[in-house]
Image 1: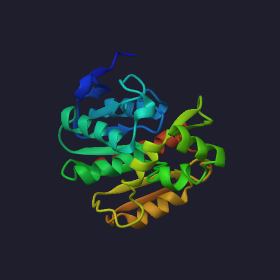
Image 2 (image 1 turned 90 degrees about the vertical axis):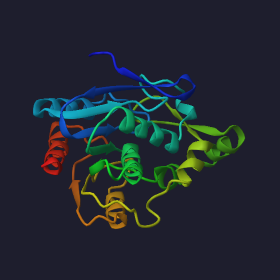
Image 3 (image 1 turned 60 degrees about the horizontal axis):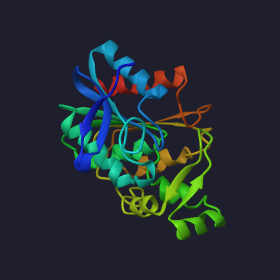
Image 4 (image 1 turned 180 degrees about the vertical axis):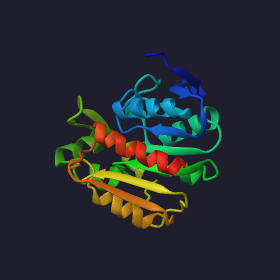
Length: 247
């Protein structure tokens, strides 16, 4: 696998990314919380775009993968800014944005910030507002004490080592909540969600569809689907949605 390119940011920080030139609309993939751009879905989507001559971009948020920074310093706003930097300085023309888990929150914030660039959205187990609706309600009393005493707690993960949940993440996420009112996004949206997702309830897709201003919203529920939605059949569903929206 080739080494990523690096996009310089302020204060000497860098975002790692891979960009495949090609036809428009290009596809931008926004990964999930603690994930990096070398995951199954990101690579499969890159291969799909290469076969079709379509532009494709994947990247690591600061504190993730090959980008600079510490994960513990990250917030939804900071990672949204990372995605905006990639949109503004790496990609060209109209975009379809695919967001996985937390990336689904980021893709919505991108569409709100750059409506002239974002032509369609594909959410894969999209998790807007997860800090307020899922992480904080699930915290134990000990974790809440750690949050107040030291500014973070360590959250066990089924996908790797424990990761820090910080007070800054919670408070910044609270300023960027979307599901509490109408979401002024008018482009087509396709939401895929597994009904056996142990991390983000599939009902989140229904809540999101209700809040979106767009009338062109499709919800695709996968009865046996988990949170990752990365089986061959799941990838085929995702690429099928992208091809339909590209048409």
